[in-house]
Amino acid sequence: DNYTNVLQAVCQNIDSYIGTKVHFVGYVYRVLDFNDDQFVLARNMIIDKNTNQSLIVGFLCSHKDAKNFADGSWVRIIGEISKGNYHGEIPIIKITKIENTEKPTQDELVPPPDATYIPTGIIY
Image 1: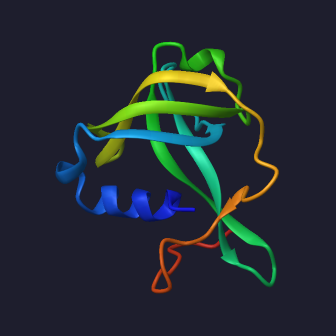
Image 2 (image 1 turned 90 degrees about the horizontal axis):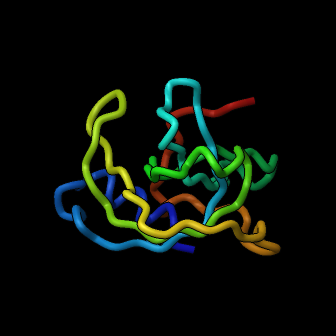
Image 3 (image 1 turned 30 degrees about the vertical axis):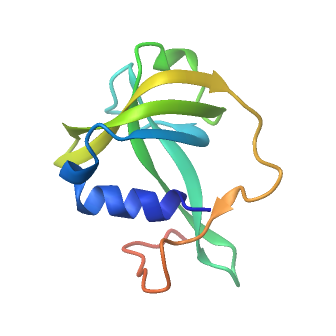
């Protein structure tokens, strides 16, 4: 329930969260310029309930065995927030434990961080 609230808070003030331990569930999402040890721990955030539109959101993560987890597979991670660079300064979760898990049967979609959230892009 609080995935996007945590994501927003950490992104807005990375330095305050460096070293914080986190435990999340999400799916593996990659883009072409990631290293072999990187993926986004992704969730789909609802941006329009009427049309079921969603946007992929998540933390960039790193782990030496990341390439062993297939795109779209659901994982449970434990890690620590650090600061890194990916097209600018961003938080990166350094994973200390990762395991496959089942796709949630409920709450697969996450809500926006709060009522004042304004999406920066909409995919049609």
